[in-house]
Amino acid sequence: MSRGLVLLIVAGAAASAQADSVCYSTLQEAFFAWTETAWDACHLQYTAPDIDLATRGYCSVWSKSYDVAKCDPLWANYSKCGLKAAKLLKADNTFDDAAFKATMLQNECSADAKFIAAYPTCKNSTMKYLNFGRLNVCLQKALY
Image 1 (cartoon, rainbow, N blue to C red):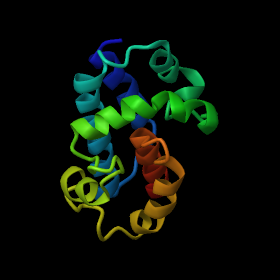
Image 2 (cartoon, rainbow, N blue to C red):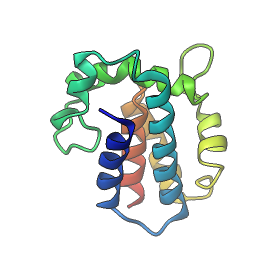
Image 3 (cartoon, one colour):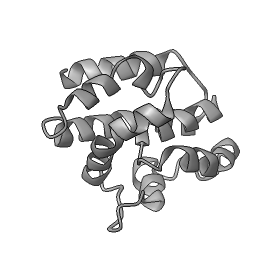
Image 4 (cartoon, helix red, strand yellow):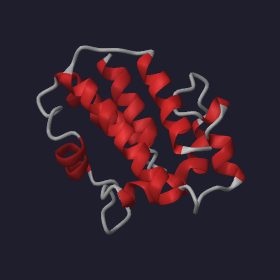
């Protein structure tokens, strides 16, 4: 699947939900930037059938029927690779919250009450397998 097609799918899904907040727009931009970075750095390494499956149907991060137990492990290595490429992974292989908020979000969400309220729950429910896509979707839904 080409990077353009991946971005088109992501853009189409994101366009279906709109919000007026600067934080929401920044989250969308961060997701697009991460998607491109991850694709460039990781798609050749992770072209296994699992990733092919993960980009379809119930394992799309935008799917209403996303199955965490089945899908998150499929995304794990690709997500970890993408986070490392985007410099969002600490040396101990955990998500770098500070880098995410400062560099990808440019602190645009630091005063957004909905973001602040949703962040701990979204992070705890999505980052066991470092699923940045689901983290971002969770935060966008909280802000919408």
